[in-house]
Every structure is written in C-alpha cells, then in structure tokens.
Length: 458
Image (cartoon, rainbow, N blue to C red; front, side, top):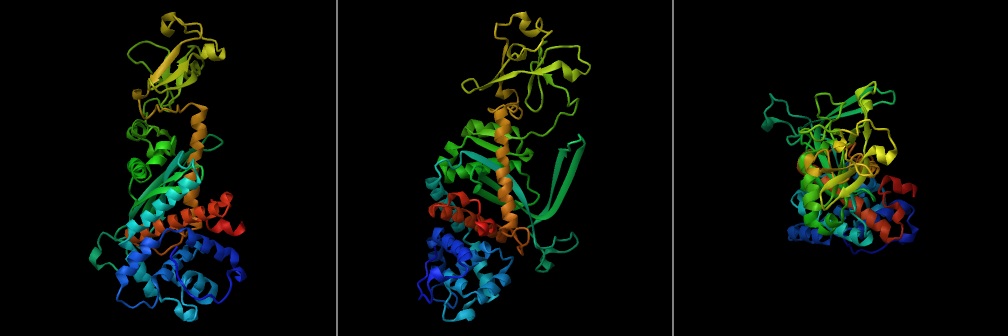
C-alpha cells in the first residue's frame, strides 16, 4: 500500500459508503507498491509536490475499482466524495481543490510507461502471495486471448503517419477472428469478428479464475506462438507453479504440434487443446493407423481410435467401433486401447484380419505412440471422458476476459497506443489479484471471483 500519513477528520467506521470504500481500502492494503512509490518519489525530488504521487497512484486504482471510464469521470467523483479523497491520501484541508487537474494524471500515467517492469514485479509478488494462500494454485491452467478495441482511429494508407492527428493509433492494427459451430438442428454457423486495436494474451488459473501471466500485442498477432512464451515466462518467474501444473486447456487457436509436444516433453503439462479440422480428403472417414499393412485399426483427426469390426454396414462409417481406452503409459509414451468386441461385447466379423487371428483372451491391445502425430495424440487422450471434463476448464479464461470487459472497463475506454494499453492491462490485473488476496486474507475466500462489480452484491 502507498502509505500516507495525514490527520483523520472522521472515523473509518462512520463512512457512509463503507461497502465501496472498504473494497478500495482492502485493495490498497494488499498491493505491494512501496518500491514503485519510492522510485517515483526519488525521480521527483527537488520538484514541486502539489499533488502527492502516492495519492495520485491510489486514485488511479480507485478509478479502476469504481469502473470510471476516464480521468474526467474519476476527477468528478473525487471532487464530490470527501471520503474517497481521504482514502486515496489527498490533503483533506484543501477539499475539492486538492484533486489534481487532468494534466497531472496525463503526466503520471506517462511516467508509468517507464515503469512497466515495476508493475509486473508487483503482479509477481501478488502471485507469490496467492501461492502461499492457495497451495493448489496453478494445477490447472487455461490460455486465451481477448480482443481490445483501440480508442484511436486507424491510419489510412494515403495519410502520412507523421502528419496524423492525435486521435490516430499508430501502434494498433486490424484483427480478425472467426467462430464456427453446429446448431442443435445440425446446421453449421459461422461468425467473423473484425476489430482495430490489440490483443491481450492471458494464462490463468482455471480453478480460481485468476491471471498468472499476460502479454499485449497488436490485434493481428496469432494466438498459437504466444502459448509457449507465456508458459516459459511463468516458469521463470514462478517455477513452482509450472512444476505442479498438470493440465493446460486452450481453444483451436493454440492447436499445433509444437505446443502439444513441448508442453508435455519440457514441462510435463498435459495439453487439453482443441484441434482444427485439416483433413481435406474424406474428412468424415477414419484413416489407417498402420498404413503400411492391412489391419483393422483406424483413427480420426480428433484422436479417436477405431476398429473396423464389420464390413456390411449401410454406410462406411457404421463399420467402425471405438476401441476401449485403457490409459496413458508414460514410460512408453503410448496410449493404450483394448479390443471393443472383448471390452463391450460387440459382434466382430473381422477377427481373421485382426492380429492375424491370434488374439489373447482379453482381446487385442493397441498402443499408439504419441509421436505418431503430436497434434492428434496427447498424454490425455482426446476420446476419453477425462479430456472432455478437463476441456471444460477452458471457460475459466473466458470468464476472466468477460470481467475485464465489464468490470474493468475494456469495453469502453479511451486508450490509444500499445504502451498505454500494456500499463492499463497491467493495472487491471493488479487490481484483480490484489482484490483476491484481500478477500482471502479477510476470511472471505468465496468472494475472490467477485473482484469489482460483483462485489457490491456481496
């Protein structure tokens, strides 16, 4: 907390807006911001100090907590709310005149651009504190990116960037994301989103829905190349988190052989990442697992292992039955499957082809090496119930993104430029983590997801 010593004109217990101000006070108590404050104060030594840096910093955080869209809205709140001015640390004797003008905030935020590393260190300190409070933090990870519109206008090709007015955003670019699915009636749907601005890439704890790492890029950046750097950065800053991580879930945007391979081989994290459809020729039909010989074992691009146990079905797809999944053999790096006829009592007319007719009593066992196709086959089999259960945890990062939009103001903001966006994203995540620490330390762990807007109903 940015500690400020000043006389009390009233008792904290008598604040009328106790619910809102108590949340702000809890946040300021939880923030490890003393190093940043001392650094900023050292830079200001010898200059005028009409508006204390600590008070300005606390009020910026208050603007996030109380969901102000911009500085002018925050300043109006400070001018009318004496209790808020005191909590932030402004001179109580100056009253509304102690509220800084807009240019003070502009300069202060510009100063923060040079201290992005200090903001990130505070984030790391809060994650360290959460590790102490939540011993199972990081066991399940989830990744996703969110689109953030720029408040600036795009540069036109015929306009010289040097002559563009202040409302242009020279750092942002255009991003496009396509969503596809199937309706209940079986018809396909497709939706394309296009925006001018940035992307916020997040890795979060999927159980507690708390951010653990982030990156801000232009909107056109692909998601997949940022997965491993996010995990690598998390491992450098919090090695114990990555060591105890068991699963990482993500949507199709992170589907790649490299991501699946390195997550398991380098970090022992099971990738639970949806797969894109890339088979162009007869994608609805399975392919031979052993194409070099005649056999009954096939597989689909989605990782399902099938046995062609009959050849007289009306449709070719009806000739296949899913093999019984028996688990992952880590020492062999293989997925183990058992004959569906023996496991489930399915009639089979192809036993003469299967293993040349020499099946043991328990049925044929098939072991699929992960290296057969690292996109399709992962340590947690895609056709297992466990994979479907773990994949549901991916929605945790979507809920974090939703809170950033609704509660932290990224749906409506006045931010232009990637430096401003990185600072603003870092501050939002700071508030999110500090509020979580505050709720836990005050014995209200059930509210750690009620970070800003939802907390009012608590």
